[in-house]
Length: 445
View 1: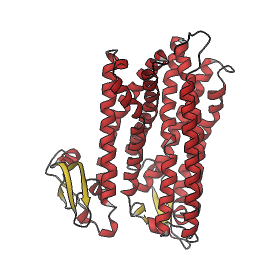
View 2: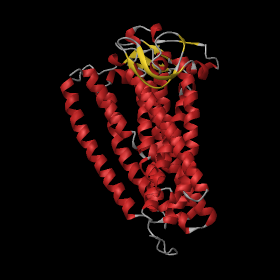
View 3: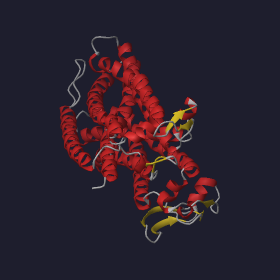
View 4: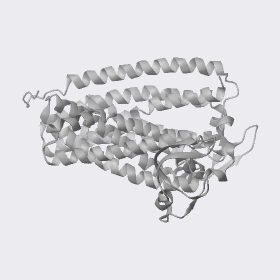
């Protein structure tokens, strides 16, 4: 098989699998801060019970997330050595900052969060929870900064010394605050909050359906639904802002997202299918809506794929489908969040069994949407690994052979499937085990 294709599949597989876990830790971290903060303010032992339960889930997710992320660091040097030399000065500084300001902060206080309940004061434990939450968010910041620079490079110059040219930082803060950083970061954080919130909603809805831990579940789902609603609406707002940035700095990606071949007023598709050979798109569309959303004028021209050489165009139908699946799921999550809050405020949520079942399985929604969003960003950037500067085909290692990549791909797949099975087994065990009772509480099953 082709070395480039195998290397892209391998990195895509490992990165996608790893990306299941960090969003959940970010979202759960914020929920833990809210839950434990309510416990400190009210002294209600039920909030302590809620926090202790979700701390266990957080610890499990964090551990698997760290294990699955280690492989990615090595792949930069094995499969993508040329790319690593090209962006090492920039990408390396962002990853170093992530390690110093995020991972050490998060992992340094993690032991207190997990094991310090009876060893430190309640305020010190809450401080540790806040630090772990901040560490998880800081980690997202620096990873997004590094990836955003690949999308919209800034604050650099090209050094041509030696055999291989490389990008070198000229302005650190211009690199950090490149044109797409804020939009991509805010969109990513909203997706992470959704992942954590809908996990808590799913478990709580399951308990309510089984008439177990009812008061625990009512309190948890109230907090989680509030966060889910904020994050879901925020995802729509940040997504719109991100699309406007893409239209300015990555017009080929935007054209692929909507299958827009001919420059001119652009339609917005609800769903459809792109025939890349003929350049035709079939589906349901809103005429001129993309132009209206971008500029306020439905007749405003938008650059089409016809303004780019064929070799500079991303895979159109794949980008189109990834994006629209993400949008459909995102709108569905907004609807579910609103419905859940409506019945919760009327105190009738427990009687809406159809909705509770939807909320149980809604945990998959943010995960799929996050993956589709990442696929849209990365596939839509092709054929560039650094947009406009370095092609993906030029970033490969020169000494790696396709057989090596295929062998490691098979092994990574087997190990990752095993880790996923362990995660699901342990998560299911902890959910069935339920929250531990405190001495001051009565049995609620």
